[in-house]
Length: 319
Image 1 (cartoon, rainbow, N blue to C red):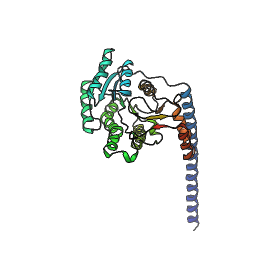
Image 2: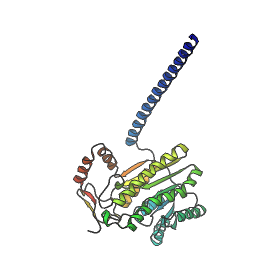
Image 3: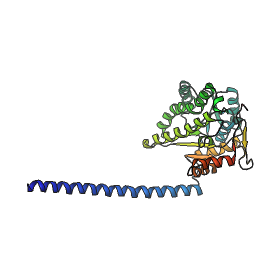
Image 4: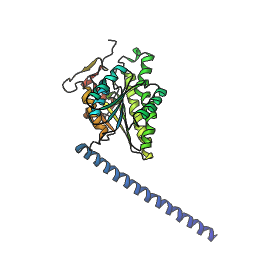
């Protein structure tokens, strides 16, 4: 009987010891968590004051989709001025060749490719051709996009499917095609164009907003998938305000001097800076990210109140 009691007593002591040990480990983990959290917060604040240096992209092979016009064209021209080798991809052969000619006329290196990026098979074929003729792409800029502006009931099935094919699925096909090359070299950068419509829902562009929210989630998930692989591949998502490219056909803005339409060249400049500084997320202009983050801390109706006050958006093309 006494032996049984002694055994139970020893077991209880051991269990208490294990519990105490687990508590100590948990407390230590919490201390490490809070200390690291504080360090990362202070580092982030410091980076806002003193931005990270821009990495050199001289000789880097940069693939830009939608390079025939607008932001894509400006990205191609500006990357070329930085010394990068451009792979210009667009469905419009003529305008794409014009972009390449401009780069070559200025002494840069650029190669034109026509591709329907909504086709997974064609993106895969494109990757093989580019790797053979130019080399392994180290910076992929998923820029191509469309924006039908109509009420949800006016959007046709074809328009909705095409919006997601170009704005979302094309990102996935190109990532699947070119990410393996980046992994093999242990370096790379994937840049995705979302929109302020990927941060806040706006009327008359419901499918577009859905596609741009999807880009945000997709890139965040990709970044998490790459993290445990310990590869030197970065992901950047850019959220521009309305840009004067012709895509935004009927914008309305209450404070035109404060929130004027952006030009493709200034958006491209900000995208390249974000990529070269290794930023995860950036709005153009930058202040919109802070406005959105702060607004999200308050009730939904407060955000709607702010949106009504700013009175900025896109009218339906059918009006």
